[in-house]
Length: 579
Image 1 (cartoon, one colour):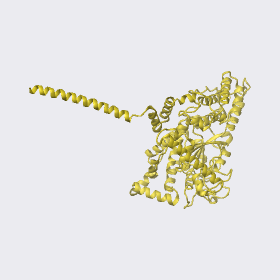
Image 2 (cartoon, one colour; image 1 turned 180 degrees about the vertical axis):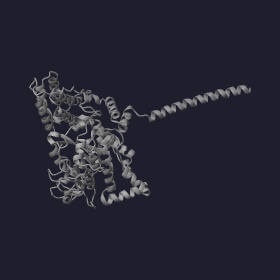
Image 3 (tube, one colour; image 1 turned 30 degrees about the horizontal axis):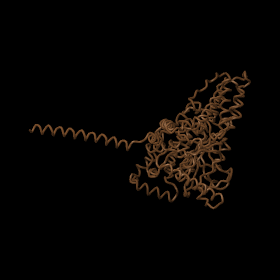
Image 4 (cartoon, helix red, strand yellow; image 1 turned 180 degrees about the horizontal axis):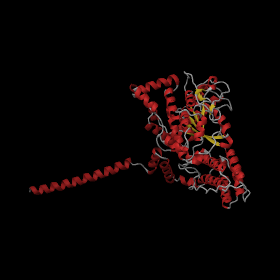
């Protein structure tokens, strides 16, 4: 009898155990289903957390396929651009190249290269799909780049069978390059967020879209100084943080270990911000910039890197002294002192004297003679009339007609973010309705502020805080991928790990705009490359084989090497011939 009860108990225990296992299995399945993300949500999450552009791009392509936005890209028709004009140009270029009709190809290049031909740079064409714009536009940019390479690769000779001589080729590339115009990367302000500028530069560099003309204002001037002194071969290690010297902050931490608590840093920096408008110690930043840049002048930096570095300073009055410093206007000025002066002007009040240094004829470091005539002012107190702003001066000196603006000023980022509408395409955070409402509110606020400023009812100091400087030409504004929780990181001392984190935020701000940047810059970069090759090639040189591209790609993603980095053999070349 006892064995019978024991067997029954064993059977009931086994059945109960099986029921518990089944219940546990379905509980986990239900919980997994409840917490799992749809493919759409997973792709949006990948866009928001990607570590590299390749990872971001792959997710963007998959998302377009999932949402059928790739069909929009394949259909060339759109009311936002003249697709008939672009299609006609594309077919004409392909036909001239296939039939080897050099003169027709030359005429097409001379007469048809406009940056915004048929309105192809309209922002509305780049906010519908995630991976890019219409494939017709991509194909057109690719074919123009291939046509320029085809002309460049023709064998140089005083006389050509088609009548297209080597001199005619040089003149074609020079004149077309001059007519097309040039681009500058403008790094604007940002305080501690200014480290995001490094990410913007890195993303552009890796895509082969980094302009050779770099302009910096305030904190952006310090980042521009770092970039402007390095040749192509040294740029990537710098942008990865491998060669950035942060010893100034390390020494400060060792000398003041008692001041490293978060609360002490917060109180100290907030007090400085209220007194001077600066979050960081200017002397410490100046020491850091000098450690990274050294005592290089603008002329020496240009000879070393072949990049045109511009630093703007805020001055009052009409003293005749330059407010734009570069290798033409201030060749002997030390870059670190110019960057420090530009950053000091970001203060609400200038409490100490600002001295810019230069090298004299013996190589000794002395105060710049113009310094005594300069009256430095905070940026918000400076008001330039038409044609007097440093950006207008850049346009005059270097034929710049297009600006890429990296905007890292925290109080302006929401306004520009809503206007550009590239980062806002990610479906993370707020729902679509709240995001659209916030965009509408911010755009309306900006419009009303500009109206008040136009009729003179907005105080000058307030207008220069809330309304950014007018850009004298077509421009595209990039903003870093910042969130509200990043404000707390402003009170942390810079380390290589934190610099890398800020750099990644800057990169993520560029990735949604890469397609728009290729359309705007690819032809310009190819023209510049072709001109520099032909200018140096001897008539006896053999023809260069044309570079092949993958479909829908105007330029290689990574452009590094002797061609890009060694464009001008003469450091003192004139702007038109050497640039």
